[in-house]
Length: 380
Length: 158
Image 1 (cartoon, rainbow over the protein chains, first blue to last red):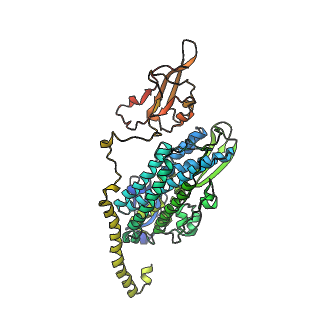
Image 2 (tube, one colour):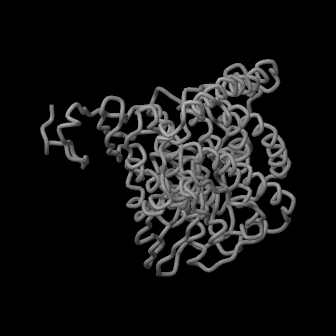
Image 3 (cartoon, rainbow over the protein chains, first blue to last red):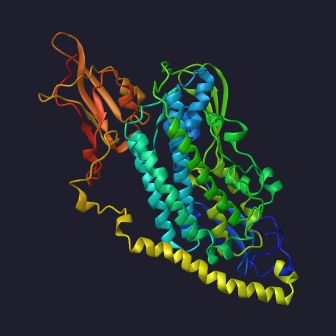
């Protein structure tokens, strides 16, 4: 028994007579559905969660501090190791900040390479979400299906960049290599395949009665809370805020493509799931347009700078998880004075306590799956 | 909350409706599974140790670092040290020496595979095209000392 005023650190709701049967349990750090080394300290009343305190930092590597001892190009490879599911998008986020500083343009072909790889990365990340979401709800078949399509994306990415996950591909002014000749046919084949399989997968999970019962009305995040906690990406759009950096603050050549920003208004677990499925379709739409218009020409700007002019530079991009922003403070020399990253998973985890209060412990697993956090990015 | 406000008849109707739609949705999901079950062509799993002979990495695959050498073991390295500077983990030590003519040439090219992250920045930095990433992907070892290797067989040409 814990007396009043003797709560473990982090818990705020005061103990009263009516809830004296409460107990505390740990979920994680070794738990398959926390998606990494994340510990959630839960205050339970029976099977109902009263309060939750997340503990993270188990795999803190001090990436931002490491960046101060590396030159600018070397930091691009560290951005792979933050959110490993959207590594190729993180690469671009860093490069855009450098390009702003150097004031250099990017050839058209390079922009198309960027957009195609971005959207492929987004599809891959959302397929992992689809897989883990099904897996966390208890459907192991779904887990394997999702990873099948993701494997195809990573095969394409491996052929282009040389590595599956830690791509380290984009450079200020373009990319490391030109794409091989087989790239566009493979992407076309993938789009064709994906259109077909997505119909299967929606039939598989979206209307399933078990999924509906376990997700509808669970873990509601209101529009006001989503904005107040700084949520971005599918979390924010699932709560009814139509904000996408690709539309509202277009970077690269996203303003030339015709695509929608899907929004749902209930803010529950099912809505966050449908948003991601809809986003896969939007990504495929962008891919189709980009593949059609893919131009010839140079794929990297002539400048290959190693130093940034002194100043402060900011860039924001929309990764599969949300807004990924890089803030570079450049001083003299070839090393940054400070690089700060605003990661989407960290901010998206913040309203978890509010969402799980009053829910059952098995719902927490479903809610956490739709936040889709990547722990190395939270810890950094 | 919603359930409390419902009248008994409406609740009962919804219950009956779900009794029908629920199993239908499950069968629909199962049809996808069966589709894959009866279509072995859709299976993408690779039988790894069995397909070793046909399994090939893409030409750009970043495996272990290796030196490009011709048949006699000559390489193009001039010991400029650009790769050493580009490496984020200090996995490369380029030790220069002097040849008989007193010119700076490559003595030993030390490479610590244990700390290498295979980012490929060294290959990008090399102005002479003397190094590349190999296609080797089975690099696990039980002997950690074998991870520290010397890449060049001969001293450099200068």
